[in-house]
Amino acid sequence: MTFRATLIVLVLAVALAGLVGYRMMMKWAEAPVVSEAEHPPSQVVVIPEGATFQKVAALLERERLIKSRAAFVLLGKAQEADRKIRPGEYELNPAMAPADILAKLIAGRVVLHSVTIPEGYTMAQIADVLARQQITDRAEFLRLAQEKAFVKTLGIAAETLEGYLYPDTYRFPRPAAARDVIRTMVEQLNQVFNAEWQARANDIHLTKHEVLTLASVIEKETGAGDERPQISSVFHNRLKKRIPLQSDPTVIYGLPNFDGNLHKKDLSNPSPYNTYRWAGLPPGPIASPGAESIRATLYPAASRYLYFVSRNDGTHQFSATLDEHNKAVEKYQKQFFSRPHRTRT
Image (cartoon, rainbow, N blue to C red; front, side):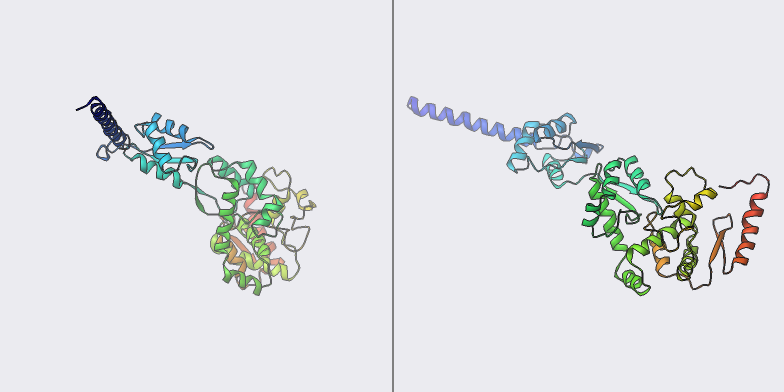
């Protein structure tokens, strides 16, 4: 064998050994850090906004979720995935193959956090809940909820999104863009306020905005769910007779600084939400009503009631005449609060 031929054989042998070594190294690197049989615990890893693929690979290696940063980078380049990683929280564990981890990052299968928005919450209270659970930025949420241009893009003809952020339990990534959270909540309202309810609103000559406005007042007026149709009947009857609604929650909503107690002077406040001073519905919702309050607005009980007063047990006494109402006030309010150790709230 000539020198030239020997050299070629040696070069090929070295190349083959290198290829075999590379294949073995890649096979090692592309395997999970540990086997599933070891049942390793999962951990949440946060991929920051704007992180490069190199930084993501370094993070995964540091957290011992992959064996080789370099091999992971090569895997990403092979799939042209180096710019497709989505930021957010991911639940990963060392028993996952790097290819599976990469697929999860590309698909954006982030951790979703459950958050419940109670019925009767205002925009500000909803923003507080979301901020407390680190779902989205409070200031940005409120800014968008009051930005007329953004509100218009949602197909809503209102000054703000008060009343249009449907109270429900949602699952959001952390963090989530405020506009995405808002869109989700408005879309949920549109699902609940279906074609049947819209047709019913048309039948009773109310717009969707008016329905949500009255429903929000009903939501704030009672904690007893089965009373909502009766509460609704009182307000519907008053609207028909052009009698002011005289709802304390609307007055409170219109006060710039509410100290927790409604005072007599507050009833003369010039706010358009003061339903003691102005007849008809207030300009818009005072909170986010739930489905039952919306239903009660659309389907009020048949009654002659024009008044109701709290029985101090979460329920109300309903009356058709002022004389009946005054007797109920005497029984459930004046006598109740005149007893020892009773204070108004």
